[in-house]
Length: 57
Image 1 (cartoon, rainbow, N blue to C red):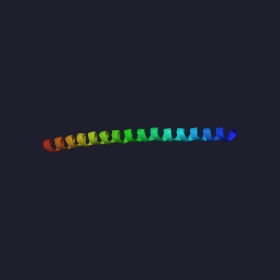
Image 2 (cartoon, one colour):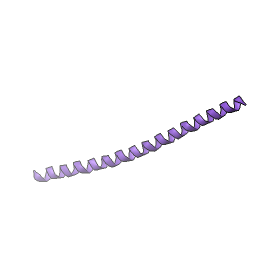
Image 3 (tube, rainbow, N blue to C red):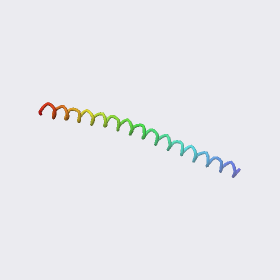
Image 4 (cartoon, rainbow, N blue to C red):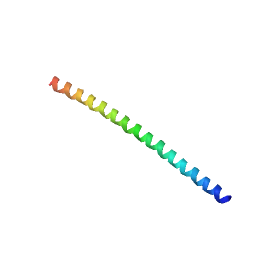
């Protein structure tokens, strides 16, 4: 019986590790998409600044 309980505890720890891995992956996907949107916004902003500088010269 104690052997069965040990296996159960190990399985629970494995499941917890998988859950943490999935949460970390989800956060990473969110961060990457957020950085991508932020980068596009910066590109647009600097493009507008460049156009304004060129047109004022």
